[in-house]
Structure formats: C-alpha cells, structure tokens
Image (tube, rainbow, N blue to C red):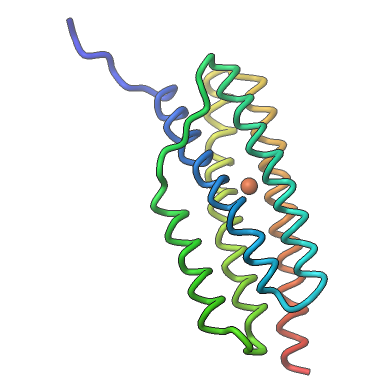
Length: 164
Ligand SMILES: [Fe+2]
C-alpha cells in the first residue's frame, strides 16, 4: 500500500494544534503582563484580552469538533520564545519608565504571531470548504487585529508619556 500523502487538511490540523497550544500559553501570560503594567488602561487592555483569549480557546475547540477531532495542542517553540522574551523585559525593566513600552512591544509580537496563524488558517479552511471553521477562525482573527490596533495606540501613549 502506498503511503498516504499528507495534504492541506493535515497541515491545517497541525497549525490548529500549534495555535491552540499558543493560546493557552497566552492565557497564562496575560495576567502577568497586566500585573507588571504601570497604567490602568494597559492593565484593563490585558485583562480584557485575557477574557477574549478564553473565548478564542473555546472557538478553537469548536473547530476541532467540526472535524470530529479532540482538541489537542502541539508545543510551539515560537510562542514559547516570544513569551520568554516578554518575561525578560518585565524583569530587566522593572521600575523603569520604559517598562510599559517594553511590555507593549512583547504583547504586539504575540498578536502578530496570532494574526499570522489565524490568517493562514482562515485561508486554508476556506480552501478546504470548511465554512463553519472558517467563520469561527475569522472571528478570532478580527479580535486579534482589533487588539493589535488598541495596543499600538497604547504604545504611542506610553512613549509620549515617557517623553513628557
Ligand atoms: Fe488569541
């Protein structure tokens, strides 16, 4: 019997597992970022996104469900690296006026990773004719993009505050 070719559907599932793992890491990391942040606005933004992240994890579980698969994560070195760097910034810049700017930069790196993954997953879901999965994933993609825009605004404010 010839070996079954691994195709786009397998690639989709592997990437789904990657982002499922990543979201769980992010869920744990956001309260730490909120705790380290020095302004109310920033703390609120991180805690609000923590709640959104819970919903995003649920959405991913529904996507697994539409495929008749159990939700499972796959260790993702990329997100572990980004989260580790954010912890370094929080330690190294504790007490510094530049701390918020550093935390925000890390948070945006996380968002950009997610936007990249979800963007790919939406495209693949549509190519595979998985309409429901595509819809769920684009909802999350839009949330991540909105969060990124909000973080950009907060980052500008943080830098301005520091300059003042
Ligand atoms: Fe997310």
